[in-house]
Length: 106
Image 1: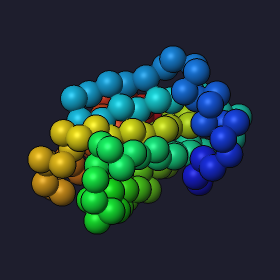
Image 2: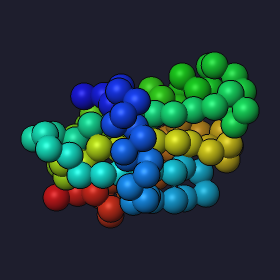
Image 3: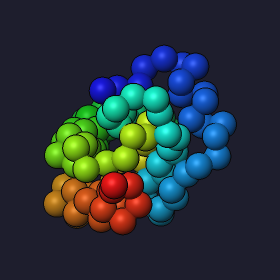
């Protein structure tokens, strides 16, 4: 499931629960549903080209989909930084896997 409504996005951003890394910021908040949800926010200033934004979204969505059944009931807002552009696909996937396992698994 995706987080689309702006009210939900503002609630998560104002909650001040976040995981920071040099290449990704993850804001999170517990939810009332029986499953985790995810949303993105990218800026063109940080990641200029659409093909880079799409590649990163695709990798994060796939990683989330695979780990979704093991994650806590949390809403995630993911904001990649510019440094994610220097990482290749395999490295991004491995780093995301470590984050899911170490921070957000049941």
